[in-house]
Amino acid sequence: MKTVVSCKHLNKIYRQGQIEVKALTDINLDVIAGDFICLSGPSGSGKSTLLNMIGGLDSPTSGEIIVDGQHVDKMSKSELAELRLHKIGFVFQAYNLIPVLTAKENVEMVMQMQGDSKQYRNEHSLAILKEVGLEGLENRKPAELSGGQQQRVAVARAIVDKPCLVLADEPTANLDSKNADNLLQMMREMGEQHQMTFIVSTHDPMVMERARRLIKLHDGKIIENNKQH
Amino acid sequence: MSHITSLLMSLAWRNLWRNKRRTLVILFAIVLGVWAMIFTAAFMRGMSSQILSDTINNLTGHIQIHSKQYLDDPVIDHRFSLIDDQLFESLNNVLIKQTSSRVRVPAVIVSERESTGLVMVGINPDNENGMSFLQSSIVEGRYLKDENDSGIIIGRKLAERLETRLGKRVVIMSQDKDNKIVDRGFRIVGIFDTQMEALETGYIFMGLQTSEDLLNIKNEVSEVSILLHDMNQLDELVADLQQQNPHLDVQGWAQLEPMSRVIIELYDSFHLVWHLIVFLAMGFGIVNTLLMSVFERTREFGLFQSLGLKPGFIMGQVWVESTLLLMLGLFLGNIIAWWSVLATGEGIDVSAFAQGMEMANLSNIIPFVIITKDLVLANSVVIILGMLTSIYPAWRASRLVPADAITRV
Ligand SMILES: Nc1ncnc2c1ncn2[C@@H]1O[C@H](COP(=O)(O)OP(=O)(O)OP(=O)(O)O)[C@@H](O)[C@H]1O
Ligand SMILES: [Mg+2]
Figure 1 (cartoon, chains in turn green, blue):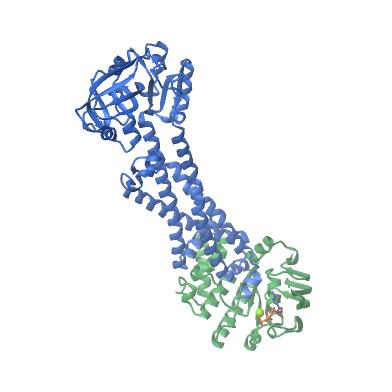
Figure 2 (cartoon, chains in turn red, yellow):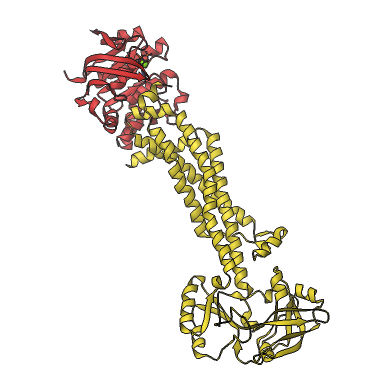
């Protein structure tokens, strides 16, 4: 099986004046295509930091990150932007959407940046919004959608152009357990249907159950890396 | 590239109306600034065009020809002949719209009660028409019939000072070509009134032939005043005339009336300074507002970056946003400025400050004049400096670190 993400001896140290914070220490990790990984751990254990490193939003202090065969740690800012545009989808905890754009426009935006034709954008955005269960709400602005619906739009946008990797940082943190469960369910289905790799960080035990692989972080170190079901 | 442009445009336009109140406030500031620039420019342009037309009307014309020493010592001795083939030929130039020859010498006027020194001007009333203020300023009596008219025209203030009036007789004394004192009685057939006291008290007008008879000269004059079709050809024509008539002295209005020239140039150079002052006030407002909206949207810009949009796109977005705002403000500002200039009609009456105006060689009604050059200057100051100043907030937006922008809110 193909390896989508590979981290080798990854370290991240934040410096705040005199104080050094070791956010990640010697992380070694391989993620194979189509996997659905849950990244768990207490607050401050380094989940967000790891996701941001893999997505090239932040750079490691030392070590290697390879995404789809490309050395993320050696890329320039604009190469990183290209990588994110074409290969990585992001879902954050909240405020994932551009407030002035409708649900459909939010989904279409990434496709528009990639230069897809209007007709293609239209068909695909409607189809993906239907898949995530938002049929009929395409023309609403984010403020007119519930938290769960907004997260669905964010997932739709993250997967619409079939990136090889979707990074979701606590996507269910602001949802009630029912909505959280639905969203997770949906993400897993999408992953299986479209052969995409998901890395989802969470505190939520229910989310961890849904993962195929569970990685536990503590103080910036991987303390558990189990294949589940 | 066009898909990016259209995305940029729609994002910028919608973001503009996200905080309507703020956008309207800054829009109002831009409109006000543009209005102030154009309206003030129109007023200054009106003043300087008024100065110019007054200068030209006050017997100066666009160009004047004199004998060599006349300007230093404007007396009868420094006259020149009109029986001159070369001069005749050079005045027969297509650039010239109208010419008028004048006798213009010092004289003394004596009424029954008072006397005073002044300049007597002999004119051909027909040639003078449309070239100087005289005919349109007659308020009592009549204009001169022809160059043999035996009457004279004097100013209202002079009439008051001499304690005389229309229909009365006065005596004019001067020196003839042999420097003999000559005098003759004239009836006052017309009174003129201008807003300038110096003109009203300093000049009297009579027929050209009548004045030549008094001074014992024939076909000789003190000056020829010239009006052009197009002022832009002035320098060219002055040079030509001077070259063709080396024994004479040919000068444009700017050399003849250096004071007016200096004032006009001063006004001209003030336009840009004024625009910059207005822009300075406006520019701070624009930058501040933009920065405020950039910081409010920190998270959003981080989001854009996480979606794979490059810093250039983010910079472009903020920049397009402010450029749209500027263009909207310019559009409205121009319209309102036009409208308010139209609303002033003939101009504004500044007679309350007329004393000062007269000193500056101005009449009481100042028209508002909008010319393309001034519009272009005001608009380019706003758009160019505006676009330059919005680079800073746009750059700040593009420099946000995505991980920080997203996680630390
Ligand atoms: N920009 C930064 N500057 C300094 N320290 C930072 C910065 N970002 C993260 N840290 C520190 O790095 C460590 C890991 O933070 P991180 O945000 O990755 O944790 P997390 O597991 O995502 O926590 P949470 O569950 O609360 O989101 C923490 O101790 C945090 O304080
Ligand atoms: Mg986190």
